[in-house]
Image 1 (cartoon, one colour):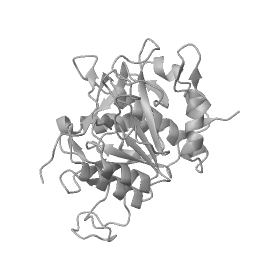
Image 2 (cartoon, rainbow, N blue to C red):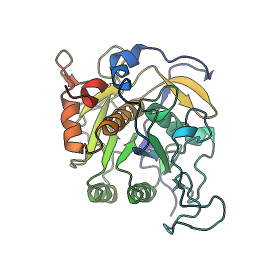
Image 3 (cartoon, rainbow, N blue to C red):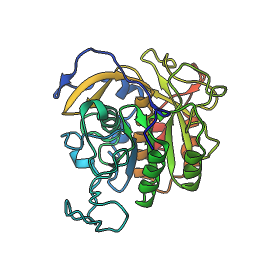
Image 4 (tube, rainbow, N blue to C red):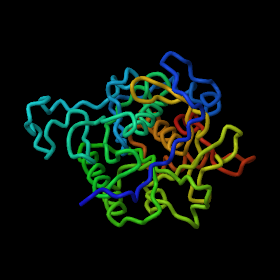
Length: 314
């Protein structure tokens, strides 16, 4: 069966028309706004927390990511044998479900999105939780994916013990297959995009964020002006709003650029949850959602990401 384009990765709008090289510093704006440095005094994350990134591929050779990429020590690299008997040959760093091989990264164009998301979650320069681990679960090429590949990616990650998944994408078509696998993985947390079309997601649902599941977290975008990002979904179903605009991001081949989009917001929230679980590994999704909702901003009438409030209970 051929691949189809039902799932659409949140489009990334490049705020600058060039990609800057490594060595530039991250602007302080968002770091200060979300109060992350106070949490970093306690933890940068725990390597026992592994985040499954269901996305396009990831440039695992990036200097920013090399130390945080999952490594399967039950496999002997490149011996063409399924040493751990899980059905995937030489799955050293995860798996490419789109092409059904272990090639996690194929090209800049195909895999910039997954690389960007990984950098925000756990990159050594600008990551929210730079000491956790990430496992690439490549189900997309660019913006294209087959729902069966996404389901297989989640199954694979879950069977490896992954209990925190980043899903920086959305689709407007309901999928029973996707709903079922997320329901079956009831003790895993899925951090999902609340949409990109400036629409009320209470009315115009996007999935998987709007599945009626207790383990799905719906994320909206916050603009540089402190208000809801202009291309973000909104509504009561949004659990938290996080930075979406003018964020300095890792790209493949150790390059960087300013980018924007709710994909970024999702990664910020996933990184924050990874930090919270590094402090308290027993945290369940219900408690995490309660903490997200406690970030309510009275002026904006929406919950706005505050890493300190979520990670450190006073």
